[in-house]
Length: 498
Ligand code: GLN
Image 1 (cartoon, rainbow, N blue to C red):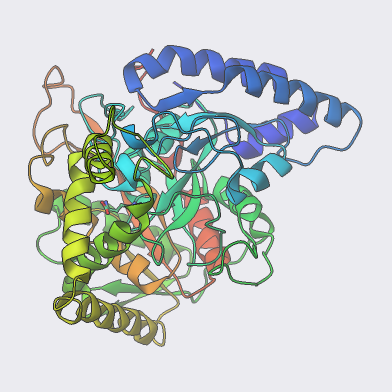
Image 2: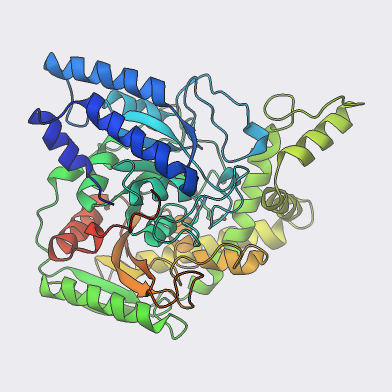
């Protein structure tokens, strides 16, 4: 299995080595064969994609195509796409066709990127393994018995399998970075407000942020500059110019101060992972960076606070799916109450119901101060921890997830175990900061996988770079400098998906 990056496709198209129709056709062929085993796409937009590719070729022939014009991309099925089904991984929206494009989709379309399909995801982005999807779980291309991570698991799998060069995802508590780590990719969650949330189906509005999944930091920069920007349709969008991230990848790391939070590098971290993270730091040091131990003392409170705030916001956001305004409607309702109850009971899966129940409880009178308000206060403490750390260091390096990709069923019966797979990503969302995950090596799966005994199954591991507000350019540059020295990002899964 091999892959082509956005940058390479752009160069090939500019040099007229191939046409957009050829690229899109090639991707569609791979998608149609691999999707049977990966289950990574909920919808494949073959016809629209080929038509768009023809148009892109015409525009290029006329000399008015942008650099990324005619290159395929896949969108997480949380982004509304005009005329194309948008399910959010839920039976609730199984027949929902959005009447408009999400801002992220419009911006990608304007750049000429070609949407080849909508990717599988945990239902309403609630999950860390893709197992809560109504459409069945997407599989990890590195090992089909392992989860691709979640909730943007489909978006990670399609890039890791080389089906498309890049995809979009969303990250509320880790849903871009954790699947990127599990699938050996670069995944970035930008600063809250950097990318418009317009048309992105809301899970927890104060935490949700879109971002790119790619093989390289350079590609992440190329896609981020397309996706970013102020949008007056989103009241939390921030009006700051978008840097040309892809042209800011040549800064030396000499003197860069990297903070290592002791709460993340504790003795619970897998020793094989510690070795890889150490090796990554050695590379940064060779490039001139210095490391310093720091403390983020409230880290342990992040997951508990998140699992109050995110369900609280989701219970409010998901009220609109009632079978009247939006969503699945039950058959033959006997009353309005019956219509609401049965439509919602039938339309939502177990995890979504659990969150709505928890969130409704946390927001109810008498409990609001004890849970929601308390969690908001913790959120401030967590942000202050980071701001204090950034007085001492320029960026922070940490593991992305506590383990490599786990097996299907390993955590799905234990919500708390599942929630804890995001302990290292959640604090960043609570603080609103930008962070990316990049591949830093491979380790053997902790226990043998069926059919794989003795073959030394290798699974990718991610390292996380966290920065100050709006420091995306700095994070991408650091990751790019690292990738110039290493080749983890060039490895591809064996052709197990053919
Ligand atoms: N896994 C976390 C959750 O289930 C984060 C999900 C996300 O970032 N969308 O809430």
